Image 1 (spheres, rainbow, N blue to C red):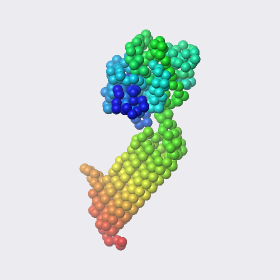
Image 2: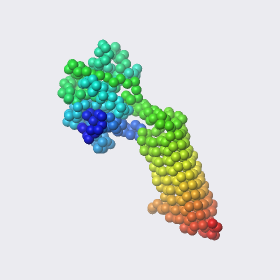
Image 3: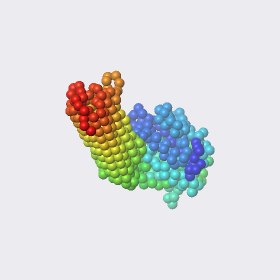
Image 4: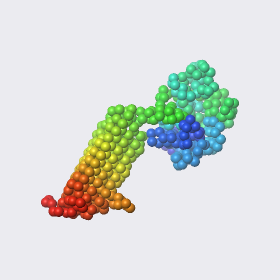
Length: 459
């Protein structure tokens, strides 16, 4: 299906993603293409690649558990339905109504999430250059992974056939060039040729690869784009394959960040999802996870053993063995070790969050210091405040959450309990072990259980 992408160099091509199979080898109740890779469903990777390659909305052929797949993709694709799962050729036939007018039709599979847009664009360009009926992606590898073998002519230029592994002779099994499973077809030739595929005698299925021999019989060229990038051609059939793809994706992402000026001391134990941004001269230490649309600034030190989810981190921030989720951290902050910023946490510039501290739906102001074993929940803490070790905002009264407000330059003594709703004024102080149940005016000292104001403080 063509969209308004006329300024894209390959806008005359559409991409059909074949995603109807059940994926029984995954041994799962969930459709194979909805299993997660790098924090996103497999099919999401395929759709993104397809859209970037041509600028057009891709067509996804669905079958098994189609409603779940449609719900996961939403409006990012057009759907064709394969009611009977009669093979890859039959699956592509279902897309004719949506792609019949496309001069070029690219076909990929929903279980090949690591294909790159650049590769699909190269397939399109190769077909245009030779006027071929088909261009296809092939892989040279000693590990066949069940792929079909590529049969070439005597000169080694043109492809003559694809032999599925199950039908290969011993000599054909020794061929190292494999059919990776991505194609670009001449759209004017494709749909008529599809109708000439005959079902396989053993399985009763229509194999897409039979189009190679049909093109050769028509006197049309079939050309191959050869890659040695095994990672890009990983197809997911089992959870072992899924783990293999995770490692490959992690290598790809980590390499990109390192080339962009980020130090990753141990890429094998560093887990960064695709939507993450990291500034230059930041150092990522081992066993760190950066998840979702997280942004890390420049000159930071993150890790080891840190987990950051959907958060915004400023420049020159140190986060040591801590968890940050849906939070915002300004410049020059030090956090951890063993601290937890929960959703809604906001730490101001130059603040310090010590060991075993937790902040939830609260602001810790610029230059403030939060000691170890402390908890801030539903609190607003001003600038240059000292939160003593063991301080807790008692924000839940059994029915609802209540807010604590602490003014600038306040000093909260160790083991203070702040029973919300309560306000501690600017430059006020609480004594160690105080249980504050009433507001503490500015520049006063409150001590005891319950805390009472005992005197005014000098400026």
